[in-house]
Length: 109
Image 1 (spheres, rainbow, N blue to C red):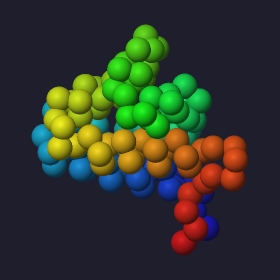
Image 2 (image 1 turned 30 degrees about the horizontal axis):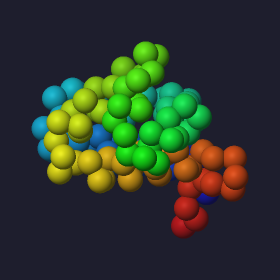
Image 3 (image 1 turned 90 degrees about the horizontal axis):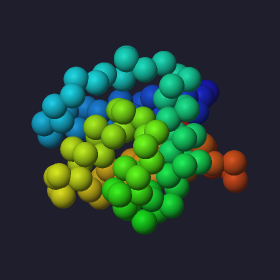
Image 4 (image 1 turned 90 degrees about the vertical axis):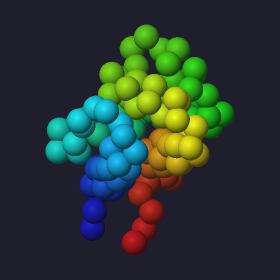
């Protein structure tokens, strides 16, 4: 059985590969993050940016001066590339929904 962290690691890894294939200029690899960092990212996304994610508002993500630097780099890159918007927001929704306290979690296999 996989854990929530394993699920998030897999999906975040997929997201990073996708962005790099599109030309994302920052060399981030999933191996650069431990499970606690990945899970904390999803929890913070859910707790602090849930409305911005639901509304698909880049400004709502950037408005917080304490936003994670990695997320800020991704947000800036994706915002400049409209063809990436829909998939990006779907990834963020998935990360946020995975850690909700209302029965969310990784989809069952």
